[in-house]
Image 1 (cartoon, protein in one colour):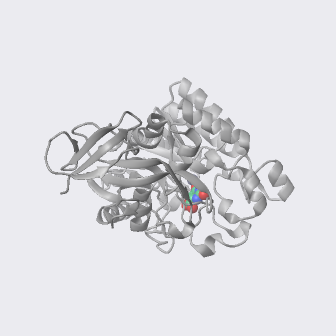
Image 2 (cartoon, helix red, strand yellow; image 1 turned 45 degrees about the vertical axis):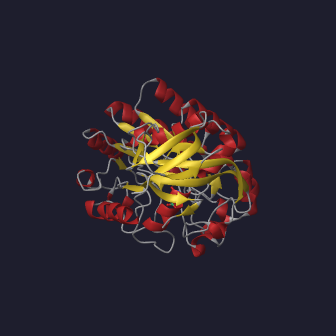
Image 3 (cartoon, helix red, strand yellow; image 1 turned 135 degrees about the vertical axis):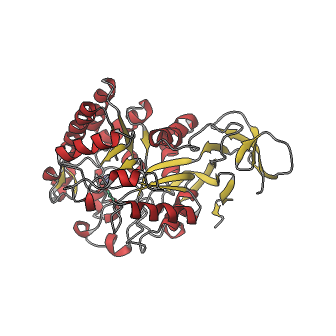
Length: 420
Ligand code: DOR
Ligand code: ZN
């Protein structure tokens, strides 16, 4: 196993130093090592994404565990959590083990499957949560993402069930009766365009209900892709009361607004929808404060025919793994400790993921990424490693280039290129 010496690297923004990677660990042991000139580069603990759609099994034309893993490594990630809305749905030990095994075979990031809460994501009957938890995949997070667990009785039972092993229910908060036929955020722009709106209250009502349920049960709730200022207020109050709730925001909800729907370009169609500028500002503030704990990508690759069609028929979602860190960097600036916390340490801690999101100190597993903050990149969809091209950032210049990523001391990315 090759050893690496990162010469002159800034660890999470600190003064330049040398960082040695040996036998899969951050090390202090002297000896031969390949030298990487890391002057001007910043080392972060490998990023951890709690919300990735890898599409395998079922839609390998849009993404596979391997292509999604490569996109993740190129984005600076060392671990991703794969959502359960595959085909078949990841609602049994068999499917989650398959995804977990495919992740190990690809060997580019640690792939941790998320299990479905309900059978077939149908919202009628609890899936085999216990069997998934005790499977080789060791599932701890369950989500029907793409769908809301709308039935309050089922949501309560799910929270009760996972409490026994400190599991988490990750909710896609969308009251379905309030979003029937919805195409975009409900507001001035939807009125102008004549498109059916997805009101903020459809998200806020479910979050309010679920924090009460989580409080009642004493169990852990995670809120996926928070998108409104009102949701932030509900979360702020719940956290102040000590409810065991955590929350994520996506890079696109931190940057883009519903005005983009006026182009009728389905690349901007996403669920929850892009909101208003005041929502964007509230989300940024909440992320900085910690009311929102983490950034998660909601990387949602879609095949060309599912995206390049009329707005109403297009599937919601955008790819995000390869642009997440540059977007966050463009918003937060070089607040490296905050970025490490929101994109690596906190997600690893929430998921209970050992070996990721740890300080880059001697003896720690060498899961890390090297960023060149001074580089600029124009996003070219054709250059993405993801099998899908549905990025809203085509042609946009973004700061920060991921130069290298190491998974347990082995490079998965070197010189900005995937090693396999
Ligand atoms: O935009 C989205 N795409 N939101 C979701 O909740 C699901 C996801 C997908 O699976 O494409
Ligand atoms: Zn979702």
